[in-house]
Image 1 (cartoon, rainbow, N blue to C red):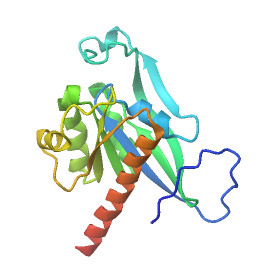
Image 2 (cartoon, rainbow, N blue to C red):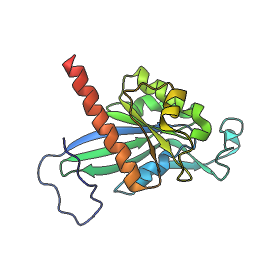
Image 3 (spheres, helix red, strand yellow):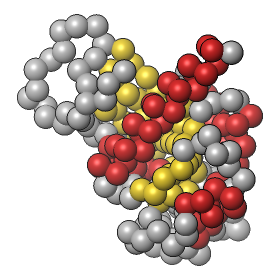
Length: 202
């Protein structure tokens, strides 16, 4: 499978041949940048379910590292991008708070792979997402979100801290930047293909 450039031109010619679709899930802890990533990469206006944070979040949502965060995802984020001319990729962002995790199973149904978005200021928040995808044997990659454009820890140190297998891709990214988010999603698709090929080979 080849990977072309993302086409965000609304006036581009319509694809006349058959089009395949695939689904990727973006997960991670509260405030790790999931909604931002979906919005940065989507070629359509993303669907978000952001709601203002209320007193119900007090004692549940740790905003120490994100003091300016005033909204939270209460269901999902949804975006769409086109790879090459015959593959449409649907991207679903999960809610990060524990009280909304019951939605994750539905969001993961039919996905070819996933992104675990990591904030190294709150590394432990990534464990539930990692456990979720490993328990369901869904291929995933880990993306370290560089909020201030700096990577504060070596990638292999993060791998060790999260006890991630050497076979799981891990990379730094800036969830605000389209090209950076694009590389993460391409890595997911490539990893999913390799994972599927390995299963077929036995």
